[in-house]
Amino acid sequence: MQKSLISSAQLTKEFVFEVFTLADEIKENPEKYANSLSGKVITTLFFEPSTRTRLSFESALQRLGAKLLTVENGLLNSSANKGESIQDTIRIVQGYSDGIIMRHSENNASEIALEVAKVPIINAGDGSGEHPTQSLLDLYTIQTRKKSLNNLSIAFIGDLKFGRTVHSLVKSLSLFKNNRIYGVSSKEFELPNTYLDWLASNNITYIPLKTIDEIPKDIDVLYQTRVQTERFKEPVIPYEPLILNKNTFKRFNQKTILMHPLPRNEEIHTDVDNDPRAIYFEQSQNGLYVRMALLHLLLH
Ligand code: NCD
Image (cartoon, rainbow, N blue to C red; front, side, top):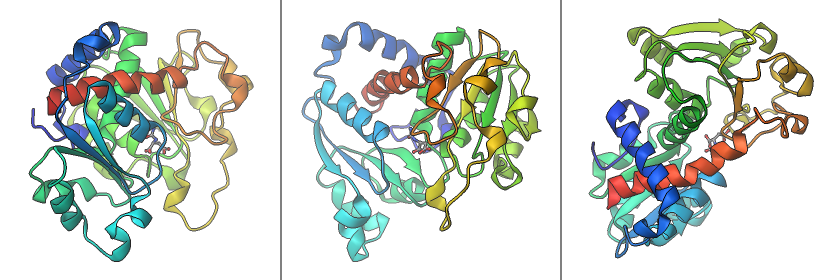
């Protein structure tokens, strides 16, 4: 495994399970890893808004003993605001730190960074491209709840076109056997061809649907997403047939789990939150341990 993580296409099954085993171990024995990154300075360089991703990375880094440099709201608060290129920013920041965790609004920002980087680069979300560390925590959440990553049925709902968490999870699910994927969206938000081709070349069944009501009620995983409104100039009106509430969720099996990368808007009503099948807050908490494990493996 390289020390940078740019796309879920880089993941192997072995590495995914190495991360999971270590995440479990860290959760049990955090003190054993408290100095894993001591002496290292790591930069979180965020050019787009974030709560979970940045704070869970920073919490993970602190818990592993690293020191932090952080740029939040980078388009305003870094030299990007003075017209500096991604390449030049990376050339500078790597002089001050031993690794860079970057979120950017451009789809290929982390690849551009990687071209000039001498320190590991971790993609924390690039435009409507990918979000590979989210896919690791999503896989981990599915594994802990379903005890397997094979033979599953998974429905992605909402913005499959711009949702980078969907893109990375679709790619990483292809590592496993016999999964069936449903893509539930309106016409404007369908999964782009690159990901459809990826699924086809990995022999994964993909079934496009238009409404939540069409999803089989014994589905294993519902993966709901918000419309990525920041990719549009005009406000986007929520599409009613894709909204989950107590009523539309009732129909599903007791073993169905409901995930969401968060933040949510109207696509999951709060009246679903107390249903034990709704596990999005647990999913987000898992991000801490998964990111600690990943950072230990890549940066130690
Ligand atoms: C996602 C993201 O930023 O892509 N959030 C996250 O990292 N948990 C999803 C989103 O913003 O809708």
